[in-house]
Image (cartoon, rainbow, N blue to C red; front, side, top):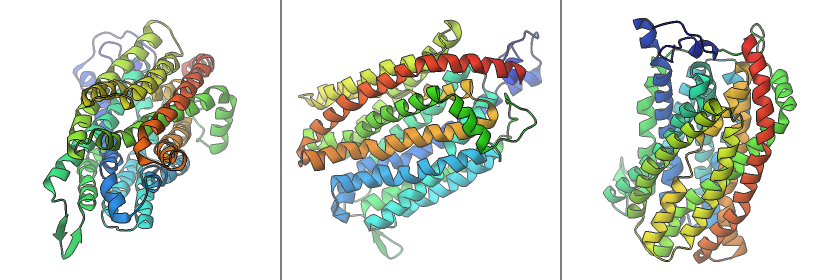
Length: 458
C-alpha cells in the first residue's frame, strides 16, 4: 500500500516482492502520507497558542500585575496539568474508539479554549482557559501515534514521525511570525470591538484560535485505518493488559519516557524564555525577535527533523542499530544544553543569534516517538503513547518554563539574571537527559527483539 514495489510491507510490516503495482495500488500508496500531512497541519495549529504566549509575557504581566513565576504557571503548569493527566484516559479511548472523532472533539475544544484566553482579565480565569486548551490538545498525539503506527511501514517510521514533528516546528515558526505580525498590526492600546475594549494580547489569543478551526474539516477526509500488529487479534484492549505489558518492559519505557521529559524541560525552558531574554539583554523589540525566531524555527528545526529522522532510519534499518533512537537523542541532549549556554553568554546580538540557530538545530527530535510503534502492539499504542506524553509533556511543559522562572525569582531574586537561570538549568538537565537515554539503549534492543516475535505472528 505504500512502498512502490514492496507492496506487502505497508500491510504487514514485512517485505514481499510481488511485482509491479497496479494503478489502484499506486494511488493507495499516497494515502498514508496524506493522513500524515493532515496530522502535521493539526499539530501546527495546536502549537500556535504555546509559542504566542511567550511573545505576550510583558503585556500579560503588566495588565494582570503578576510575576515571572506566575506567568510561567500560565505558560506551563496550567496547560500541562490537563494535557498530561487527561492523556491517560484519552489513550485508553484511542485504543478502543474512532481515533478520527477523538481528534475532531479535541480540535474543537482547544480552539474554543484558546479563543477564551482572549476574553479574560484575571489570572485565575486565564489559567482555567489554559487548562481547557491542554485538555483538547491531549487528544492529538496519542491518536496520531496510533494512526501512523498502523499505516506507515517500519523502515519509514522515523521519517514519518519526524515529518509529524515538523508540525510542532512549523507551528513554532508560524506562532512567532503570526504573533509578531499581529503585534505590529494591532495598536499598542488594543481595540474596541462589540462595545468592549480588548488589549492587544487578548486579540492575539483570539486570532490564534482561528487556524485550527479551518483545518478541522480535513480530519473527515480520511478513513479510520484498520488496526494491525496486535498481540491477540480477537481480544479487546484493556487497561490491565496494557499495564501488564508496560510493567514487563519498564526497564525500557521508564528511562526513555523520563529522558525525553528531561530533554523537553531543557527545550521548553529555553524556548519559553529565549524571546524575553533577547528583549531584556539586547533591547530588541519583541516583534523583531519573534520574526527572527520564526525563521530559525521553520528552517533550522525542519532541516534537523528530516536529518535526524533519516539518521535514525538509516542506523536502524540499514546498519542494524536497534537502539538508534536512544543513541541519537543522547548526543543531541548534550549539544542542546551546550548551545543554550553559549547563547546566553554571547556578548553581541549576532553571536547570540548564531548560538540560537544552533539550539534550534537540536530540536528536531520527534523521531524518538517512532520507538513506540516499533516496540508496542497496536492495541496498546494509545495507552503507551499517552503515558509517554504524560511523563514527557508533564515534565517539559509543567516544569521547564517554571524551573527557569523559579531560579530567577526564588534563587537569584533578580529578573536581570535570567541568563544565570538558563545556565543552571542546562548544566543540570542536559547531562541527566543524556544519561537516561544511554540507560535506555540496552532495554530498547531487547524490546525490539521481543517485538519481532509477536509481529511475525500478527
